[in-house]
Image (cartoon, rainbow, N blue to C red; front, side, top):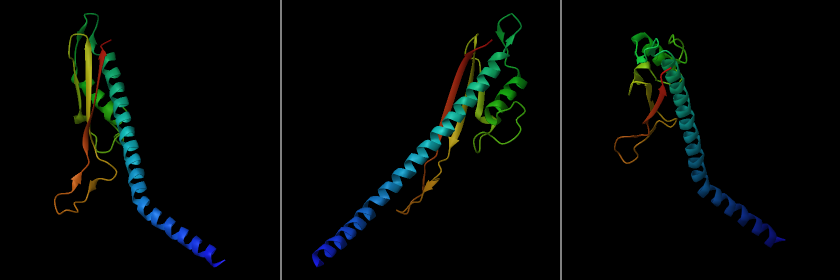
Length: 153
């Protein structure tokens, strides 16, 4: 009987040590997967909004039946508002945190197409990694870009 209870104690001790060794790695993996999912969500939101803005701009960029593209200032501003806020009036909160209509550019690369580009500075959930070595903290933010080109209608 004594031998059996000693073996159980040893097994519990080994299991606790294994958990202490593997738990930090598992926590890092969970944070990494969460961060990656958040980045994909924000990139998808940005590309969908850029596509909607390009569709809005392309639908009214041609002047009559002459086939000339005209980038009217009001329509360009509406497009920027549609991309960032989800509506042409520019009311409400931006679709992504810290995003503004100044991050959206509208251009015409040739005589029949419209190009809408959007930039977004992605700031991760973690924010910054503190500098344990005495230097500057590491920032994990990076620039996301989405460009959509459509034929003007």
